[in-house]
Length: 177
Image (cartoon, rainbow, N blue to C red; front, side, top):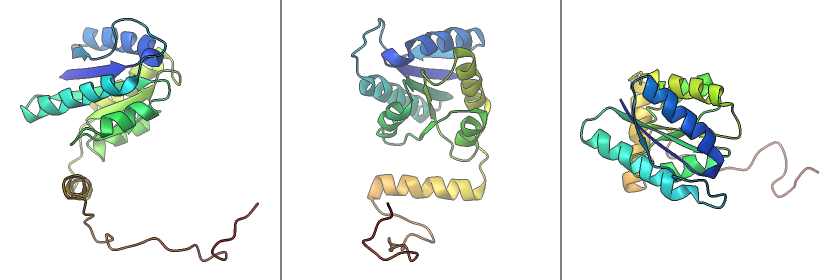
């Protein structure tokens, strides 16, 4: 499996560790991150390039997933999700990493380099990389709804006609202190 990885300065230590460990496990590692530490670098380009590479590989029939890293993983996930067709998930433990693949067929996982030890990060990533998509009808249907919205701007599904409504437990326009 090919794995595209990207980080900014905040995830460099974790990124280097993951590249070394995953390569030793036989993964084909492609690094889209910076070559040198720069405390003011910006993560969007790194993460977007990694996400684009995952989609390009998958479009060619290659087995490919991605990892994006930063201080928290939040912004990196958001950047990766801007690439058409990408489903990037922030994982903070084994369960969220596995569910991202099993239920959401995520192709990219985001982690916070400041949130995990390198060893914890490796276990989370290994869980993500080794978990297959379940293919259950309900998950396929939900992914299709997301894909349709991404392409058309229209929400589909049996609850797509719902709109927002005021909370009935208190009067509209009042706030609790």
